[in-house]
Structure formats: structure tokens, C-alpha cells
Length: 200
Length: 200
Length: 200
Image 1 (cartoon, each protein chain N blue to C red):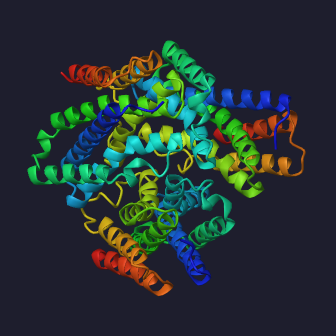
Image 2 (cartoon, one colour; image 1 turned 120 degrees about the vertical axis):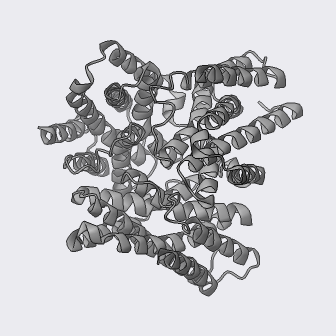
Image 3 (cartoon, rainbow over the protein chains, first blue to last red; image 1 turned 45 degrees about the vertical axis):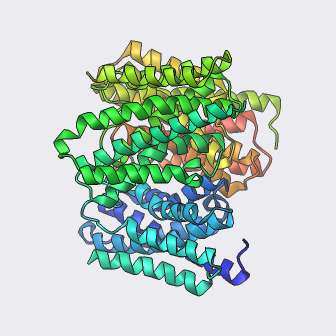
């Protein structure tokens, strides 16, 4: 399935905003850990690119788009630069980190499922790949940053579930030929909202 | 090399039992860590799929079979559900975890080597890939679960060795055209037995 | 772009020396952690192969050369054997580990960028892939060995930068058609030297 031009633009926007969001969460964990500017940039890129790279490698779309489409690099480095300049006190990074992570989670579960669908996967595999895309970047961030992955922590009860629901909704919409810019964005917003509610 | 139909059935059985075994080990580590039902399911799937996904990505067989053949997902989720219902006391998870891990290790070293051979690799590369398949899922489990990987721990002296021997035996059997359902199963049982002996 | 025969030999030398260097760093971390001979060998191979495997998977060159070209395995296992025999006191491993890591870092940033260029990537993606190749093995080593990755640690200020500069220099040399055995080696030595200066 090819996306219409409008859908392609929307897809790119979701991808790049998601990359910025995950990059911000990586940069904020780096700030909390006291890393220097290089460490902040590296963790921002690894988190911003990680989920999409895993998705692309699993789909055989290599080199991953994060390496070949330089907008991804620009977005991740610019986000890291903003965090370096802002540099919040480490104790105040918790909520911004979780907020940015929720946005990335909600956007990537949709784009991951869409890309898997474009590569010919059925609804269930596309859901799984959307979930993998959504939780992959955060897993890499948490492992590199030396903390237990959010997706597993017992104080983070609803992390994988919003991503799974967002990816499954996307796959069902694609299956029913109801996926549009509007419904896709709503699926992402639903996943983000559910995750943010769980953070309260 | 194509497997005969009987061998293909045997291969699928070894793969799915191995997936269940590793999924159980991941779910049990999650129980020991106090994770909730989502964390148990995620760690079960990551452990059950991890070694095979690494193998498939390294062979270029993407998307990995764990994403496209839904029996893998069904087996891993069902195994996680059994552990969730059983939910042993965390202090009693150690032996079941190691037992399940030994079964997965012995089965995956054989299937990994077989699949590598089917993709045209020679005996030594097939052995290496069998070893990677066998130890990959447990490595991912241990990293995500925040413990030192079994394959490296100094109190786990014989972990990689049974997997290496099982994979090498499989590769030699394939090279000598002696690989059958029986000899392959014996290679797996030998690796499992050696690992279980080391656990005493 | 095909490399000339002389360049190909030089490329292979840089790759295999880099593999030995990273394998030594992995083996030394294993010694420091008190791992046995199997753990030392596994961590040596994982570190020696890790960066190049990530590069090859990201480029779609699978199975990775570390699995199919047995010189890589021979070099990594031989290096592990040397460390097993030497077996320095754990407290004395710090400088040799960092020294070996610096050599691997400097060599792999060049070979990673060259291989990416050969696969048709432009200068910026080739730089990124060179950086990934250079820092990948050490990241895997540190994660498996249970320590914070060097590339992120706040007491390791100049780790990613030499690799980035070495990869970028290589990409520019390739872009300007000035890449030769000599200039490539100089780029590697420059990266190694910069990293070693940072260790003082």
C-alpha cells in the first residue's frame, strides 16, 4: 500500500515529532545522570533513532531511514541542543522525561504499524512491529542510561498497553481501509492520552 | 538444503518448545523482580523471541519468523499466562527459571544451526549462529531484567559450552548428511542434559 | 566504489587489528569482573564482533562478515587466549583495557565509514555509520559487563568525539577521492591519538 501524498506528509511529521520527543527523553535522562554534552547528544540520538532502527532492521529496510534521511539526525541533534541549553536541574527531569516519552510512544506505535503494513505484514504482525517501534527507543535509552526499562517497571503499570492499543487500532484502521491522516492522528493521541493518564 | 517434511515438523516443534521454554524463563525472572502482568508478558516475549530474532536478522530472513508466524506469539503469550496464574513465590523461581532456560538453550542451538545451514552457511558459521541463537534470548532477558547475563556469570561455569557443543554437533551432522529428526533431537537433548548437569 | 587491491588488504588489516583490540578490551573487562575462561572468550567475541555486526546488519550485508570470514573468529579467540594466559591482576586492567579500546575505536570508525561508502551511502550517513561501528562494540561490552557505557560516562569526556572526527575525516577523504591506504591510516591514527590523549 502506498500512502497518499497527504498521508506521507502526515507520516513524516509523526515520525519526526516522535524522534524529537524520544530524543528529548534520552537527553533528559542523560541530564539526570550528569552526562556531559556528548553523552547527552549520544543518548538523545540513540533514543530518538532506536525504535525506528529496530523496526527498519526487522523489516529489512536498510540502511534505516534514520541514517539516510538527514532530517532525523537534524531533529535529534537540535533537540539535544535545546536540552543542553535549558539543562534543567536533574531532580526536575522526571516529569518532562515521562511526558516526552509518552509523546514518542504514541506516535511511534502508529508509524511503526503503518510502515509494517506498507511492507506487506498482516494486522497482528503490524501491531507487534508497531509495539516494538514504540517501546524500542525507550528500552535502549533505559539500558544505556543504567535504569530498569520503563516497560518492565512495576511502578509503571500502563506503558506497553497504550502502545499496544495504538498499534492495534492503527492496524485495524488499515485493515478496514479507514486509516487517514485524521484517524491515524487520533490513534496516536489516544495512545498518548492513555499513557499520560497513567502518569498521574 | 530443504528439510524433508518430517524434519520440518520436527524443526517447528523444537522451535516452538524452545520459545515456550525461554518465554517461561523470562516470565519467571519477571516474577522474581516483582513485575506486573504486562511486564511478565513483555519479558516472556522478548526472551522467547530474542534469540530467534537475532538469528533471523543476522541471516537476512526478515521480518523474523517470530513476527510473521503467529504460533510463536501464541506460545509465548500462553506461557506467560501460565506463569501469571501459577505465580510462584519469587524465592522459588531460581530452579524453574534455570530449567526452562536449559531447555530453550539446547533446542535453539540446534534450530539456529539448522536454519543457518539452510541459508547456505558452512559448518563453522552455522555453529556460531546456533550459539548466538541459543544464548541471545537469555542475554536479552538478563539485560532487560537487570542482572548479569548467565553466559558470563562466574557461578555459571557451563552455560555457553553446552550450546556450543550442541550447535557444533548439529553442524557436523548436517555436513556429514547424518542430520535427521532423531540425531537432531539427540543433539538437543545432549546439550540440555549437559547444562542441567552443570546446574547441580 | 571498489577498493583497489592494496586498499582492500589495508582495509582487512585495519578490521582485524580493530577486532583484536576490541576483543582484548572485552577480555580484560571479563578479567576485571572475575569471569572464567568461557566468559572471557564470549565477552571478547561479543566486543570484537559487536560494532562490525551492527554495521553489517544496518547496511544489509548479512550474514555479517564476522560470521562468514573465519579470520575474525580466529583473531578474537586468539586474543582471548592471550588474555587468559596473561591474566593480569584485575586492578591492573584499567589502562590496558582503555588502550585496546582506543585502538579499536580509531580503526573501526575508519573501516565503518569506508564500508558504508562502498554501500553507496553519502558522507553524512557514512560518518554516522562509522561512528556506530566504532562505539557499538564497546557499548555491547559495557552493557554485558554491567558497567555504564564509556561513550556516556561523565569521566570519559572525549570518547565519541575522536570516533566522530575519524569517521568524518574518512568520509570527506572518500568524497574528495583522496582516500588511500596512507590517508586512511592517518585518519585512524589521529582518532586513536586523540582518544589516548584524553585518557591521560
